[in-house]
Length: 333
Image (cartoon, rainbow, N blue to C red; front, side, top):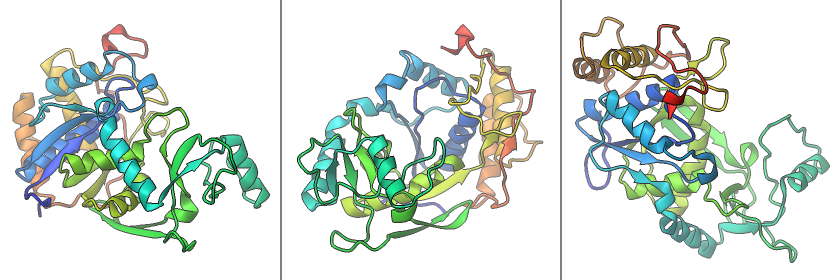
């Protein structure tokens, strides 16, 4: 059941942040998005999400592109870099400002925490702070540090805003955006663009019909849907894939030191792809003695999902047989 955009046809994407090389978990997301596009006869695009420049080591983006190529995952158009698209984000922010939905915020993290405590909120250690809207009515003469989006039902209606959507694996989803997230940042205090605004603008500009990504990003979806609504942009379909877990049950990620995939030989790439396919619920006995043969078999198996992943798919532990580079290994860059 392919999805279509206004221009007609399936367009998917993989959008890694080049804060380090691909690891086993990110390959699962890359493979899923590629398979979904190929199974539906669509196009697959690459976007380098380097909007947070200070966290992106030089050369990491090119290393990721090389890793994907070694795994046979080739985009249908040249990649785009978020760091080159600031004018698009500024145009979107200007529209939201003109509409009254975006406002300047002068609050520091410490001030936000104090305001929440004054309201009787319980703050979790290292947890996200739900912004209480302190600057909605103005900054009282203080210079704005960041720009935020109102998370309420209307400009004059303070009622909580419920966002509902259908995930192709997780099923029906809903979130009270006001209570769970609050007024979220569009442009940060350091002048960098926030992920939520950039990804919405880019998905629309690239004509993305289907977003296939890891389950850890599912809670971003309501914020992105709200931005799409306010900017008059189409909402793609969403599919959030199972997470890959580390040896101790933690989510495999760059933040917790996930090791880079080592793809020195075609055999390494084939083993990595088979492990990623297993995490996605593909049959372990898929045919293919080469990367290209395996991918062809995987496309056929993915097509059997008929647009939906099994809802029972659960986070997958990392198999020790998967070839990994050790942290600090120079081959990772």
